[in-house]
Image 1: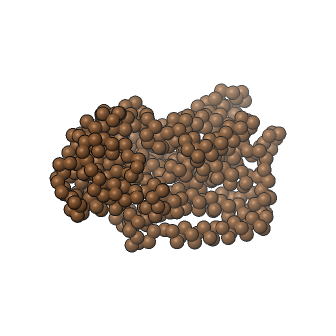
Image 2: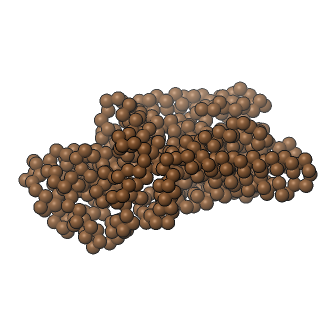
Length: 523
């Protein structure tokens, strides 16, 4: 983790300490989400299964053994390095290690965004313009920017490969903002290429590194075209060449994965042929303004637009192009909100109205901040799952009204349902969990790996009608179905085929087919 850059020398020690306290609180809140509120992402469980298979069979395309309805040809686990890391971490430290890793990545990403905002503010200082960024108020602006970033990004952080990708992207962005603050002469910025090489084995979002550098290259070309003085043009030529080499190096780094052909094919599938990605079924693929939290995020985007519109002269051409790219990605789907936050929050800090850092030095605020920070650290430490905690109990600790998993229903299936075909019918968000929980005994019907299933399969299930679902379910030959109580897409089709409920709790129910044989303990 990089050191915090030197704070404003013109600010007093109380102001600087107040800044560090509030920043620590924001980072703690980002980290605490994984410990206090999350129940692990549904995808993390199939990532664990894939990681186990990679350790067992070696790095390369895999034949799927998790879902019985998936396509039979090998598929590409493009996040192979992260999945192997997740599996290893779970084997070493279990649930506690997984939750702690998610917390550290979430808090670390917000910290890197705050550092990027600080570098952007330091680089935007101007001593002549009427609407210039002044040294007074930079600390408060960085704090506000970090808070905005947390609101935009936190809903999409969890224990899965893309969260590590977001963190690496935030580190790369910090290096770029730092380099621009140093007149585009720092040596550290060349680390973006190895970061891209690592990131391409974690998630295909690695392409965002050369794409971002491409926007800065376009800005450098524009700035060079507007200059007349020969000395300035020579320096501008250097910047253009520097960004061109950086972009090319990071682009080549993105090719450094043993899964390259499959990664390219998967990106094309997601973009043009995956009906689930194009639909509104998957929550993170919906517009970012969906839901109550999304409305807050939309309002904060409106604040950003107003600030940039009023003070756009504070931004260089490359930064404006970079922001347009991030905004376009945000409009594409909510999952891109952390990418937007990484770029938008530092530029928001630069374009804010003039502020005063004096509020950060007030004794009442510093005392309250220190007390809340200590209380928060104690609360988070108490909530961190113990070494011997039962996974199902922790996952469902918030009660049946909160998202959770069918732990008791899975236990019932394992102990009471006779195994014939070894297949289970399930809903989308529970496929990963059931495939992990019952993987040695049963295959699930589907999970979150939308690219592993034929488009026609999704059109018969979540994107089809009742008649199509009934035809598909009639041919599964499954031993049981584990479905959510009261909100299942498949239950009416199964009941119409003669299936009956043999177990039910407040969260889930188990159904078996009419010719499925006796269920132990159930008359």
